[in-house]
Image 1 (cartoon, rainbow, N blue to C red):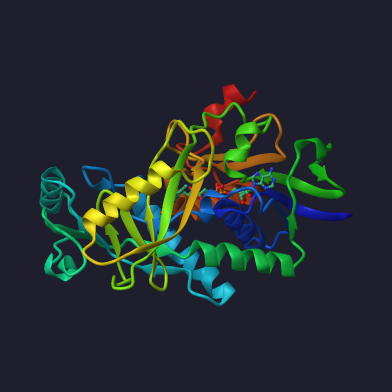
Image 2: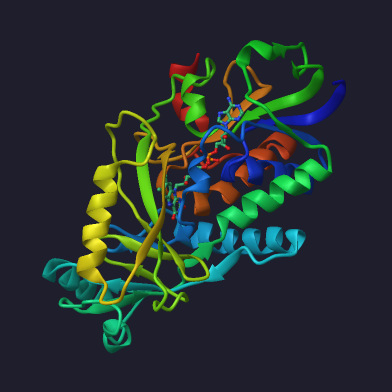
Length: 351
Ligand SMILES: Cc1cc2nc3c(=O)[nH]c(=O)nc-3n(C[C@H](O)[C@H](O)[C@H](O)COP(=O)(O)OP(=O)(O)OC[C@H]3O[C@@H](n4cnc5c(N)ncnc54)[C@H](O)[C@@H]3O)c2cc1C
């Protein structure tokens, strides 16, 4: 294959999809190399952007910037793909304990932006609510499977996608740019999720991946316009199927679904729901998380044709569009990358 492009992009999860999207938006050319047989965190994620987090129900990092950016980005890519990718879906909180109920009440009365009261009667027909309920507004659900599949089809139609495992042995560094299997590029950007942990240029980054699992459950009588959050989350997936999860395992033997998780979720669902449910699938993946909980975005300090956009952790849906855009803008017009996400903070470990 002989070809010249502006960018080679490795990986087509959320990040690689957005990198290729913004490359093309900038009027540049790209080829995406993605091994569809390597599991992607993006294809098991529930697709939720929740503006608040944790037991104290505080706003997530820079959500005032990321949320509007993400809403407009997912709407735009949906328009290009002629489908709806993003939907507003309030989070209905089913407080799992008296402490969480108190925490909600506290936040509701202090610095409240996103919380509102929710009538427990509205879910009582489906769930046990001994500690009451609450609601988070401005949360959204992204249909990741539709987005990733449709974007891949578009790349394939335009001869911009290669389904192959990228091997570093095949990459040649040139005076200007790089070459991979006869394809010349000005730059190569890595968005291969946890694959980057083995990348000789980026293995010095403090990756701290964690495993997450989910059940796909049919709950015929549950309204699918909201996300329900207890100790577990129940997220509309497709028709009357719901995504139910998750967990954060820092020590794991493999990335496969485990019996322990299935049993735990099944028990939790039985205790929470008052209506029947049926488990139809069980999925698992590795989140490309890192120790300082901020993404890795930028070009290598010693090799200016090699870059990375990674480390999205638990927040890929909100972070990926923003930081993919930031990296392409940085490459094309020199826009600085936000210092908390900039790769420069690890310069010493990369040299
Ligand atoms: C159970 C679970 C639930 C989650 N829920 C949410 C959520 O609700 N909201 C949210 O914001 N985030 C969520 N996340 C986190 C989110 O999934 C990640 O932040 C995000 O998907 C990371 O995207 P990525 O593109 O960096 O990596 P990935 O999605 O892992 O993509 C990497 C891609 O690179 C490819 N690849 C890897 N190695 C190679 C190679 N050598 N050659 C070619 N291709 C390669 C893989 O096939 C894959 O397609 C969840 C994660 C999990 C596991």
